[in-house]
Image 1 (tube, rainbow, N blue to C red):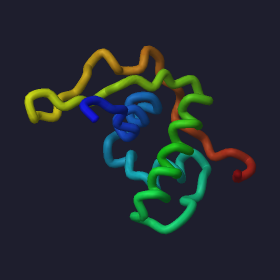
Image 2 (image 1 turned 90 degrees about the horizontal axis):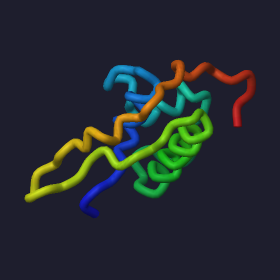
Image 3 (image 1 turned 30 degrees about the vertical axis):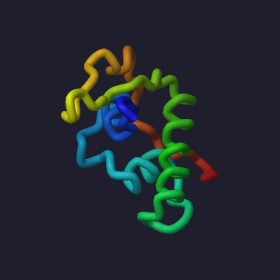
Length: 96
């Protein structure tokens, strides 16, 4: 993979939260979700990241490539900053 979407960056930009609020468990908690599976399991982490991405799309986020590798160096892709933000997620009245 030479380019990808860093969900932590997208989440922070979209919900206007600082980087220390973009850890996987904190993002899930802020979206009113529980961590499903075993922590630090690659498959379970991936499933939980997908749940976050789905929620962001539902909230109106335009997910775009925001990182890439060029000449062996990690580079940010500035054109991927979402066009519009959303308010900080609120705890829903029910949990999924």
